[in-house]
Image 1 (spheres, one colour):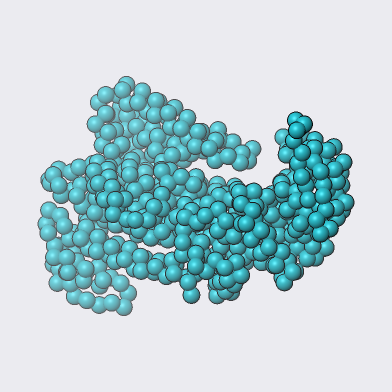
Image 2 (cartoon, chains in turn blue, purple):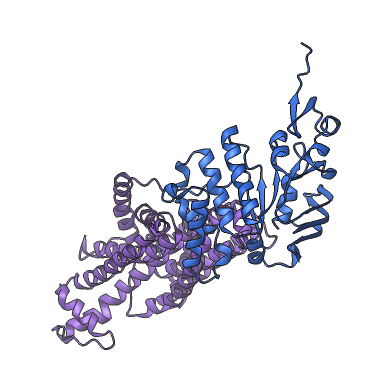
Length: 257
Length: 348
């Protein structure tokens, strides 16, 4: 479904992503982890076609570089880390913007587009907010609306850049469970970045560890989330415990008790 | 269905706008040194629509006043007002700033310099018809715009629209300085220059209308066709690109169209301030933040606003005439404050 081969990205003369290769099968959830500045977001932006890259990225067998922007937008949708909240815009109008790649350049949205918006609003339980202005919603509600806009694009690949950073643990679970459910029922493929390693390990099928732009580990969560890996690449003192076969990260403070 | 609630209000506002345009048109033609009955004026205008046949009962002289004197001026006000308001709405969307003005990128100062050079050259004895003034102003406006684009780094594809605004500020200061210098050196032409700078809608038949009409038509078509893209641009360049747009390209096409339209309007009517900021703003407060409402409604209400302002300008101190720029500022500001205080929508 997603095939990233030897992809490098240079920003302002610095190599931010360095010959990274990864794949994601249809319906798979792959999460990119790594310390600050490792190039996680940039890698996602390259897959979304927002930054120029060297190497090959194919989505559903089509090369990203050959796609026109509208086609790319129908195949790949992205939820950004801190999306702009347009002042005064209603939730329904905002989600409708997600239909842009399906509306002909000179045309207007049709019944199919409204139906798609309606179905996304129901799936994410957002119907009660449809006419509310986006800026009046709470953080968790907003995050669901951002997700709704991306889902309205009807893309097969969903990119999530730190989707839960601003949320408390309950709302984190709510949003991630929603994505997980869509993946199971709709065959959505998910590529995300995440800061919280325990959450990353809980939801992802596979983890990719980036450090200084290079891929240093790729595998099941318990293969990647090892004390050695985290010590080397995050410079973190942690203990990794397994709970129900899922690695849980416990930080250890520096000063001895 | 709940998702259509906001958009269903749009046709009603459009209908209200069309009604306002019609009413202001009739009023603008009826009121003047010789008053004409508004109903007869309406009948006279309707009579000229194909397949409509109404006897207005106006005398041939009165009909001539309508068609040769008043209507051209009213139509010019309609076009200039519509153009300035549309361009203002467009600028506000492109720069994502509700205070952006259509004269932001140096158009006003360029036109001012062009007009001043022409007026002083003519005062100094250069043989040229008064009708060339709009051409001089238009050349100045377009020249200034090109300078702004050049300095703002359009060719190098700068991603930051702030650069363009800064370039506009620089060009404006520079050209205003040159304009002031020329004006001070030619004190005898100063009155004429001022009268142009403050804006005025004087016509000789349909000539001015025909001068601006092509620009207004092209600009309106381009901007209205792209109004959906302006809505998408409100979520930011990255996400607009993620939704399949070329944000940078859309932005420059929209700015070029709006600026050319503004230049054309300014060249026939002088510097009429306030319309470009206040009309889109009021429309946004009334009909919501979607540019798909704001832009067509700005055309209708901008035109109406300027027709009424011109009506005040030529009747308030009759037989004299106020500069229309003074009227727009004087009438627009309190109205704006009123709308702001009485609407609950905090769309700003």
